[in-house]
Length: 100
Image (cartoon, rainbow, N blue to C red; front, side):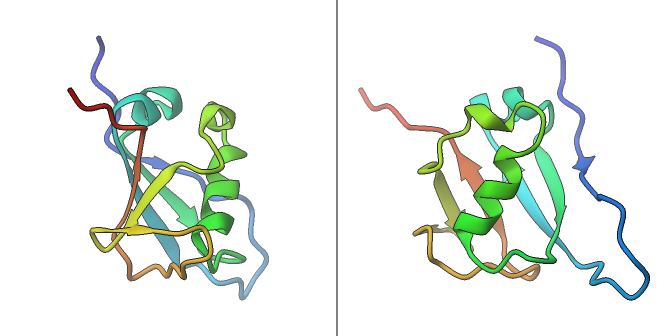
């Protein structure tokens, strides 16, 4: 398997004076494979909850395969869809886990 690029920046055109803060999201396993990177930087504008963030990620190429109920950790704690998220947070998107 080829190594994934370290960072993918998704920055759509913004008007002058727009909020340029970004949310950095770490991706693991299958989700990193789907999106072709292990880290995304997504404009924070319009994103205030985990649900908003997942919606934005799912709109990216390869992102549609990520479930709306995907496991998201914010600051090393599992987060609900209505949990707040800010650019200062450490966010990770984890695929379904299996035990054995």
